[in-house]
Amino acid sequence: MTYKIKFVDPGKNYQMIQTEIDAAYREVMEKGDLILRGQLKRFEENLAAFVGTKYAVGLNSGYDALHISMIIAGIKPGDEVIVPAHTFLATASAVVNAGGTPVLVDVARDYNIDVSRIEEKITSRTKAIIPVHLNGRPADMEKIMALAKKHKLLVVEDACQSLGASFQGKRVGSFGLTGCWSFYPFKILGGYGDGGAITTNDPEAARKASLLRYNGEDRETGEYHYHGFTCLLDNLQAAFLEVKLRHLSRWIERRRAIAAQYLAGLSGIPGLILPHFADPRMEEVFQNYVIRTSRRDALFEHLKAAGVETLIHWLKPYYAHRALGMEGQRFPETELISREVISLPMNVEIGDEEVDYVIESVRSFFKLKAESSKLKNSLKKNT
Ligand SMILES: Cc1ncc(COP(=O)(O)O)c(C=O)c1O
Image (spheres, rainbow, N blue to C red):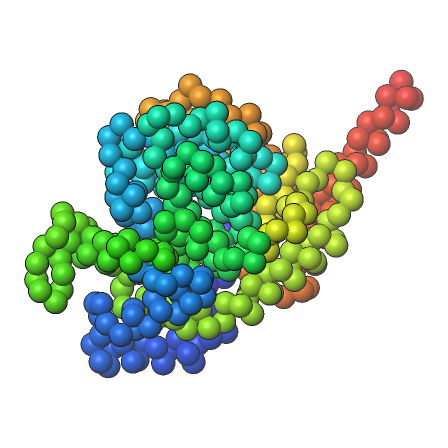
């Protein structure tokens, strides 16, 4: 189906920066710089500077960043790692694939891990916490870092959805042992395919990640140090991401402006919850603009008919998928979220008029519903 307003529009985004992307492509192709070359190094340096860490290591995906972080953290069979119940499956899969056990904690109304529920899940086997900064909003790093210190736990940040967000003036992805990033095309900094990275201030973590991503091999000596993987960030993707990183601060401002436009246009609709949770400690980047209503499925259909593409993250909590063997646990907020949330188009490709069109489409849904229930009431009165 062709949508009038797409959820994201990578083709249009390319047109916005075509000259720079084409120049980056030509540089890589003409030099034949394909694996572990200058473009990757340059991107890593600039990413680290953006996040405020000493190092960044480019990887193939956000999943790889999480998995390698679990290995660096020394997670082994029997170790427990605290993760939110409401996140993308990759957060938990990284723990499982490193041999550990994810221990789930429900989220709060702002969709991030409920910090008041973490301590009750800590046991003598707990080794780490993975806070997820979901939808572009930081988790409460003040409480999480204090708990980690108290219980001597490592913190690995799943920052895949929050590049550029800050907590108490410090960028997310710079608090824990590592920050994990995804450059999947729909992300704030999206490549033209898969991509990811870790950021860290720990030289040993950076060294280990650099070795693990390339079969454990030290490329200078040829020595194998670990049984590793092949999960590098391609040089070509790094060159493209480097171009986009130059635009990122401006693009984040644009996302904040769109969020403000949605807030102004959608405030005060009974039964509709908007993603604005005042907390002066946080600066958000609005990776997703998630709205919430008990009439979610009908709203989804209404917007689809109006030509507005929306996404639902996620229709079913990951732990409820039978094949994963994690069912039998209940997380009320996560379950309610899976029934109520819907994400509106949020990207730097859309203009103010298109955002207004989305607002009008959402408003018309609620007006129709209000009128039909008014009609029902008057019919009831008349019978
Ligand atoms: C919160 C979160 N964690 C991890 C990932 C995994 O990233 P990737 O798709 O690059 O492997 C994603 C990507 O959707 C994500 O949103």
